[in-house]
Length: 79
Image (tube, rainbow, N blue to C red; front, side, top):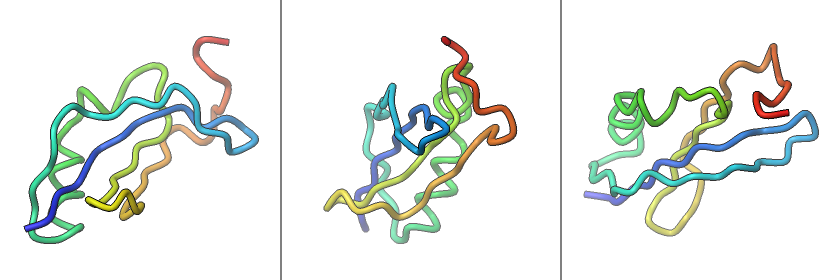
């Protein structure tokens, strides 16, 4: 069983990630795919007005999955 962390942020047109937030719990799962399914169930955390990027890291902090949201309208909601 591995430990995974769910993060979200804002990805600007230059690729820079800002407004980074980490979900306050650890997702325990046997595989990254299972952890990803659990992460997708966190809709209230993933989908907010100031978020267009979500990602999952393993216990060592390595990226195992990412999801870019709303790439067609990349103007920051707080601009």
